[in-house]
Image 1 (tube, rainbow, N blue to C red):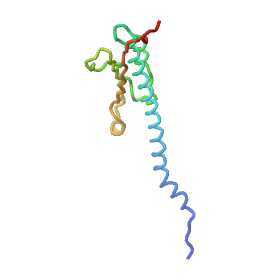
Image 2 (tube, helix red, strand yellow; image 1 turned 180 degrees about the horizontal axis):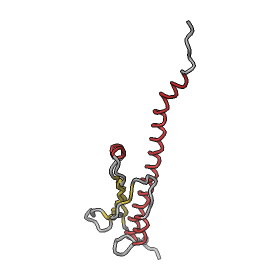
Image 3 (cartoon, rainbow, N blue to C red; image 1 turned 90 degrees about the vertical axis):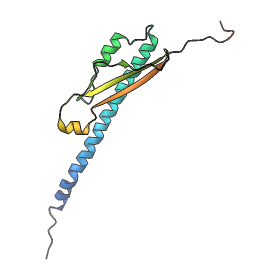
Image 4 (tube, rainbow, N blue to C red; image 1 turned 30 degrees about the vertical axis):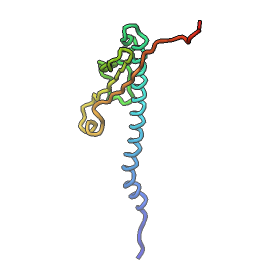
Length: 137
């Protein structure tokens, strides 16, 4: 009796393809999420730096507008309208902590089960006084 093996490769491919596709798309999603977190991290650092350099400790309006208009790779997230937001001071006027929050905007039951509803990036900048060394000019 002869065993036919003509369809074996296509059946194995059909079994492995969904697992491989899930793995591939998961890696792509994680890459886009990493890019967005780095973008928000840079924006939060720029906001904290802007507050340190200003006289009144606030973020420059042009920078605020630029941060709020930033488009993220994961288009179903949007930067919160209150971002960048100064977080509670730590009993020191020379510490500036700013957070930028991205909210999930797509209402889809599958996406809501898989994706976090929001993520926040926080950066802190410290204001120090410039000093000159003893005996310097």
